[in-house]
Amino acid sequence: MPGFSIPTVDLSPFFNEGLEDDKKKAIEIIAKACSDYGFFQVVNHGLPLSLMTRALELSKTFFEYPIEEKLKSSPGSGAPLPAGYNRQPEHSADKNEYLLVFPPGSSFNVYPNNPPQFREVLEDIFSHFTKTGLLMESILNECLGLRSNFLKEYNNDRSLDFMVPLRYFPATDTENNGITEHEDGNCFTFVFQDETEGLEVRKDGEWIPVTPTEGTIVVNVSDVIKVLSNNKFKSATHKVVRQAGRSRHSYAFFYNLAGDKWVEPLSQFTKEIGEPPKYRGFLYKEYQQLRMRNKTHPPSNPLDVIHITHYAIPHLGKEENS
Ligand SMILES: O=C(O)CCC(=O)C(=O)O
Ligand SMILES: [Fe+2]
Image 1 (cartoon, rainbow, N blue to C red):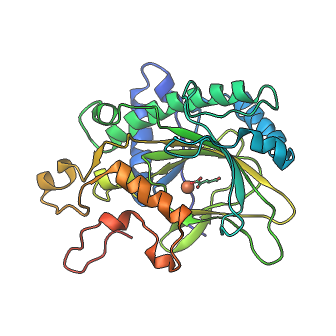
Image 2: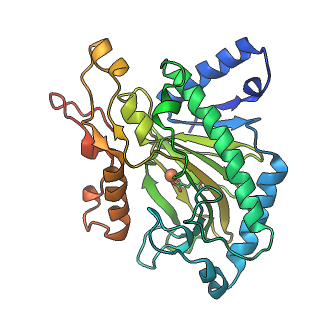
């Protein structure tokens, strides 16, 4: 789409002392990207390239194993999301398989035994994602002009963050849907991808491809931040399109929120500036459960799929929550 491209921001000023002007510039670009797109990319983000490359190599090896081997790490019960190896059911429009992991040490995790180094690399990359997540949270806190550490104190439980290495199957002659268009329900998401194109983000009704660049992480603002900011920041609609003749591999890391947290537009974006709230408050757990239900019991009418608009307050018939 001419004129549109997802901005890329260098995070190195945040890892070095004294580069206040560079930090300020980066924060301005991120704030603008969050209100224009809800999507941007980052480089010098703290994840070593060698670790990202290794993680992709190992997940490719894992997903190439026969299904019996992969099913050895199929999910146990009891976790809020099914940790372990999962393949989308045959009837699903989404054509991918994935391995869901919670933080290292979580009792929900079911790690594969093979390839042998996979678990260690998954734990290592998870810890790096968490550190970069904490940094990103503080950057978004500043972009929103919130009191220092507000988001960190509000979202102070990292135990339900989760990560998924994914494999999308090659497209067939008749269909190429990898993940149906959606918004993420969490706070924000990090994605890195192999060289196979597929991720697309919607901006003003157009689909913009997020072209893979080695070492780059895509950052996607999600529904919780959108609601807290009363729509100042977007939670962009995105999807994955499959390519013919090749699988696509990616890693997605979901910086989450504890289920008992109350989510509602903050007074800074409502009362204090004379704006009505665009959402009623809700318990995050309830929203997560409704989203899970979309997957386990897909409604026959796509219009009945629950999105964040479920909590939207209509104002004088003006729909501002698209
Ligand atoms: O694999 C990707 O590039 C994106 C994955 C995604 O959007 C998701 O899992 O929510
Ligand atoms: Fe997503």
